[in-house]
Length: 301
Image (cartoon, rainbow, N blue to C red):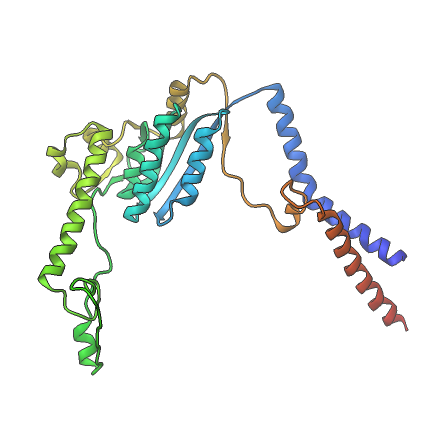
């Protein structure tokens, strides 16, 4: 059994080394927070092209409804989104603002364009560097192409079978009929009208001047400020100043971010595990150690 006890102690020591640093860090952090309490402000990062709103909406609900969170910063580096994704996040911000009086601002780092800008327009204030990229307000239907001539050239016979005159509208192997093209254009026009109406409402702009700010152009932060698309040229310090003013915060801010998933080993010690985790761990240790002990004994024979 000495081999088993020795291996068990090594295994437990490795676990302790894995878990101890974050535990100590949390203890120290909570100790200092108790002595010097700070105002909590949440950060929601939006990066790249967005195709799924679920995680962002979940964070918005969590932070808006948490009374200890005094404000929210959307850290924006987004070049666009699927139309439904951008509007879903936009609608959720607008809804939550009505029922929870809590400031939410956007801090742009590099890019705030298209669906990303739609989301930013729902927030109370937009801060962006002078050389950042802002705008691209418009709607497009990407990846619409035709390959009928290609398959004919390679003597490939394609037999489309559909029910409904417009069902094959986006089929790349058939010709786009005039009425199908009209349908697609009407969809884009309708989405575009919704897009500019929402932005004009929030940014106090006139839809009659939409050609100046909503024809798909991309602007620098400096140009966007002149057009009324953002509120201030700046970076983190400017955002902190605005947050403190809007949330009436004095002193330091504690920035709150979504926690990263725990490692498989550390998760064994989180509070979310079933009550029998300790017995499962003990059983796993016993199995590993018994196997190694048997192999060690066999090697000596």
